[in-house]
Image 1 (cartoon, rainbow, N blue to C red):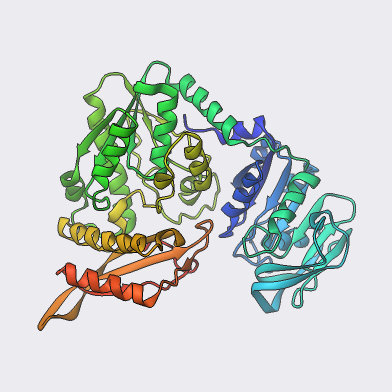
Image 2: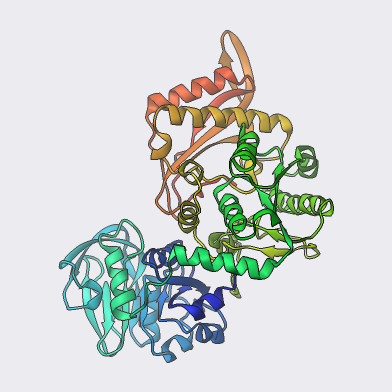
Length: 522
C-alpha cells in the first residue's frame, strides 16, 4: 500500500500547501495537521488539474528563496484564483500574490531576518482574539510597496510598512512574517483562524481513526499473502512493524538486517525488543560483510546512500526466496523522505538528499511496496506509536539515519572505522544520559572525520583520527540550533574518547546551526 495522497484529500477536508521552495514548507503542513486538519504539499508548478481534483478547502502559498523582482521566478497557477477558495500567502507567497494581482514589490534596503514587532492596524479575522502587537519571525529581502487593487493594509512593522494585507471582499490574505515557526508569538492562532474561521475546515484528521483506516487498507491489500519488513529498530520501521502486526499478525515476517552500520549494541537491542518482548516473527540477517564489500572505496555520500538502499533490497530479495508466499515489501517511508527526495511531481524539484527508503530502489524489484506511513510526519508517526502501545523510550530515541553510520563516516567505509565510531558515539550518548542531558537535546551523535591529527597521549606522540561531536536542539528538525552543552561536560567526553580509543587523537564540537548546515554531515 503506497498511500495515495490524492485519495485522502478527496475523503476529508484538505488544506493544500503550494511549495515555492521555503525551508519552512513542511512545517506549514505540520502545523495544519497539528490542528487535526489534513494538509498536503504540492510544488508550485504542479499540473493545474491536480490542484482542482484535490478540491481543497483552502490554499497556503509558502515562502521561497526567489525574488519576484527577477524574471522567470515561480508564480501562482491561475487555477488557484479560479477556484474561489480562501488563499493565504506567506512571505514569497505574499509577494508573488501582490505582484500577480497588480501590486508592486521591491527589494528592501533593510532586510529582515529574525524577530520583529508587528502592529495590527485594521480588523482582520486572522488576528481574532489577539492583541494589537505581536512578536513575529521575519525572513525576507523583498517587500510589498504598493497594495494591489481591492486590497487593504492590515499590519506593519518598523521596516515593512505592508506586513499583512487582505482583499476587501474575497477570502485572500497575505503575511510577510512566518506564522508556522515557533518563534512567532501566537502563530498557531493565526493559522487556526485561517483554517477554521476562514476555510471552515473540519478537524477530522484524527490518529485513532487513521490507525483503524490503515489497518483495514493493509488487510485489503495484503489479503492472505505475507509481508516482508526490513526492521531497523528506528522509530519509523518500529511503528510500521507494530501497525502491520496489528493488521496481519503472523503474516508479517520481519528481517532485521545487521549491516554493521548500527550503533554499538543496537543489533542485540532490536532482537530483544521485537522478537522477545513483542513476539514478532523476526529473522536476523548478518550482512555486515556484504555491505562493507559493496561500499569498499566509495566516498561520495549519495553513492553510499544508494548502495546501502540497493543492498537492503538485495538482502530482502535473498531472504524472500527462502520463504513462501512473500509478495509484499513493507517500508517505513515517511512524508519528509518523499518530499526531500523530490518524490513530488515538480518540474523543477531539487533533491536535498536521497533516502534509503525512496532512493536507489531497483526497477526490477520483485515485491510490491507497502508504505503505510508515507503521508505522515515524524511527530505523527510517534503519536501513532503511542496509540499502538510502543514504549516511550523507543519512540523518543534520537533520530538515526537510514544508512546508519555509513553517512557519519566521511569518506570511504571500513570495519575499523565503524568500530572506532561506534565506541566514540557510545561514549557521547552514555555521558549525555548520565548527565541528564540526553532529553534536553533533540539529536546527538559522533562523526568520523576523514583527517588525522597529531596528539600527545602520556609521553607519546599519537598521529590518529579526529572525531566530531554533534548535538542540536530543535522542535521540528526543519531548523535547528547547535546545543550549548556545558564546557566541562564536553571536556569530560573528549577526554574519555581520546583516552579510551587509541585510534583517536582529537575531538571537535560542531557549532553550526540549520540552516546553513544540515543536521547530519552527509
